[in-house]
Amino acid sequence: PAYAERAVQYDSLVRDGNRMYTRAGAPYRTIESAAPVREADVIGVSVTNAGDLHSVFRLLDLAGIPRRTADRVAGVHPLVIGGQGGLANPEVLADYLDVVALGEAEKSLPQLLRTVHAYRQADPTPDTPLLVQLARIPGLYVPSLYACDLVDGGGVSAVTPTSLTVPERVSAQWLALADFHDAHFAYPVTDGTAAGIIPLVGCRHSCFFCTLGTPPFRQAPLEKMLAYIDRLEELGVPLIIISAPTFTQYRHRAEILQRIRAYRDRAAARGIKVSTIIGSVRADEMTADYLRDVNELGDFGHLFTELSLTQARGIVTIAPEFAAADLVALYGKTMPPERVDQAIDRCRETSDVINTIMLYFIVGAPGEREEDRLAIADRAREIRDRLGRPDASVIVKLHQFMPEPGTPAQRLPMTDPALLDGYVTQITERLRDLVGEEIFDEHYRVQYGETNRLYLEAVCLRGDRRVGRVLENLYDSGTDLTRLDREVLLKALADHGLDFERHLRLIDDPVLPWHAVNEVDPAAEQSLLLAIEQRTATR
Image 1 (cartoon, rainbow, N blue to C red):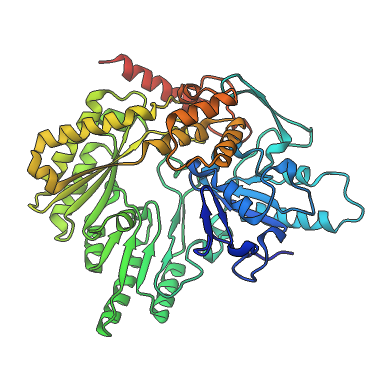
Image 2: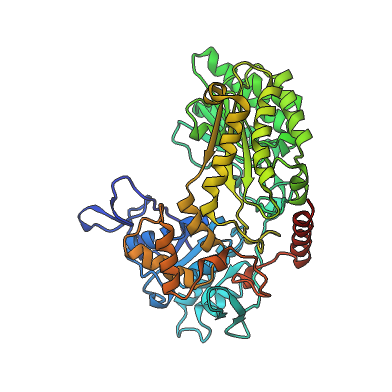
């Protein structure tokens, strides 16, 4: 008994500090029917990054919906549901989201809609409150129905349901392949300039710091993929995006690339250029056949480099994560240096197109030593030499280790982001010394994100419900949360009885703030911690 409409941050909106407004005070409206967003029965908000949780305030303010669950009135205001990876720790927005959908919501959402519809149609009003009814639906977490015993400085000592009818734990829901709608594997709408396929969900590997391996691995039926590509040819769509975290894991990747190539050839005969952007690939799965197939596409690139670099073509992205082989193994990564070398050899032997390698490395991980960080520079030089081209370039992309909720690494300590700029400088200077100033300037690049953003992400990944109030106060004060000053954050945390350093430490408390949604095996956590302690003790 429902239909869906979309609302986005339109170009016509006016930004004033952290807030956004419509012109002339008009209602914020949906795309499909131009209905005021605040009149919806249910609002869904996706948050993809923990450092962007404050965007929920901006969207609710824009729609004219009270921010906090306690201030919303059932039947008057919409029910607000959150989802996506940025809510791996949903506790930060516990006071602001009525419901959090865990995992894939294709089954839980229809049940929610039926429950809301029945509740609002009932006369008299049912004895069981709506949120209690929703909390009984598998995969739906209702934060307001859980009481937290807060600890001074941050964290909790206990999380308990407020009613016997509310489950103690909520598990993420995942779909069987047969349950997927076609739109899960292909973009359902195109504007005629680009469209894409999603040939798989999840990852065959489960690295200890990564959430990609959490959903079960599922592959789209080949016939659906091929039929969709044929439809794109009928529509004349010139750009095909293969959006997958690990496209090389798709069983029928050769057939997909061959179908795209046939479309490209027919389009070229009519004077039309067709390009392909491929998502991420794993170096240890990059075969000679794969490189041959992508080379034959002619005009191709890889997704994340395509979006961020001026010179997009001829780039392969590889994520060794660590330069030290034992760190690779310790964190469950399956790409030791010899496999990376094999991938570079294949690029050299099979392709006359690939001249740039982008390398993703993690810095600041527990168990890491200074020599491990400096070894990143050595690996960058080795890989360029191995590619064996005078025009070869290497881009080193550095990321701070962040212990993600829902992974075996979730309790590990986090390096203070204030140290990361120094680590990046060390690696850069080491690489410059190794290859020389002129070669470095022409053929190497070291990239690193903004430290300011990581301060906020650190507390949002591991914080309890009080962090949400900190975010709200910073938001209301007009503080630029995309460039948050360290001292401003520390003071805001202290005003709410929270200690920034506590969010960086090893979480040895028996209860995590996200206890009600935690499904990580404690034995896996302990095994990883023991391995790190052993490496740290061994020189």
